[in-house]
Amino acid sequence: MSIEGIEEVVYGVEDLAKAEQFWTDWGLRLAASSATELDFRTLNGCAVRVRAAADPSLPPAIEAGSTVREVVWCVDSPTDLDALARHAGITRRDTSEGSECVATDPNGLAIRFRVSTKKAVDVAGSPSNNWGSPQRINQPSRIYERAEPIEIGHVVFFTDKLQACEDFYVALGFVVSDRYPGRAIFLRASPTGGHHDLFLLQIPGGKPGLNHVAFSVRDIHEVFGGGLHISRCGWETQLGPGRHPISSAYFWYVKTPCGGLAEYNADEDMLTADWHPREFTPSNEAFAEWAIEGGLDGNTRRQLAAGGDAIVAGKFGTERRN
Image (cartoon, rainbow, N blue to C red; front, side, top):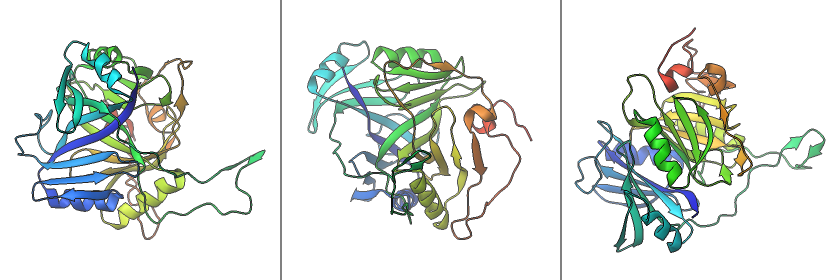
């Protein structure tokens, strides 16, 4: 069985107009719209579907307010759907759009699996001139005026049932990449792939909810260009730019009117079945090698905020340091 990654995320939101403006500024392509529905696409066809929160067709929310209502994962073939349907709690059904498998995970989140409709795209990041191995000769590196996300890279949720969620997803074929024992787990959809497609966090006294949805872009320069553009558009950065030491990825997190955060993400580690999961203790240093709190102003290119709160507080909810 082969699960490729995320095909789409479905939001239920309280303000469709703000949602439309945000995802347009974010760099997604508006594919369809109505008074109650918006459909956006990444370059490779991943979908961000936005629906009015009161839409009765939406699955139940795992938290109050605007949030992700459903995550759709893609597989290689109908044979993979057959294999998924043999798992307890997974239902196979036929729809006008084709066959799919549906379930609710232990966190209460609705999930679906269907054969991938993502398309190959001819995009590439700027080559790097690493010492001893220059890849960019007589060619300046690109500067991005804004981002154009290539695909949905991963999703992150808070949970109060971490072990049950791990057991559920591993049984479906997800693979553990790394973990904070008893606190959080990184899972990738298949043995070979990016560092994680799903990250689950359990904080003391915490409840289920959305943390963020990450969008993969070409390179670190597009992370910067996208972040600066979204800042110029007036949206608030929570944290970024910065770099995660666990996945090696560069990031920029922005608050969204759809609930949680959206992340520009690039240059994450690629893993295979030979990878051995590591264990970490929650800390500033484990979460970010470096990061800019509040982001950069898109016009001055200077830091917007310089607070002293620990980065780890926003992720694990345990302590705040100066």
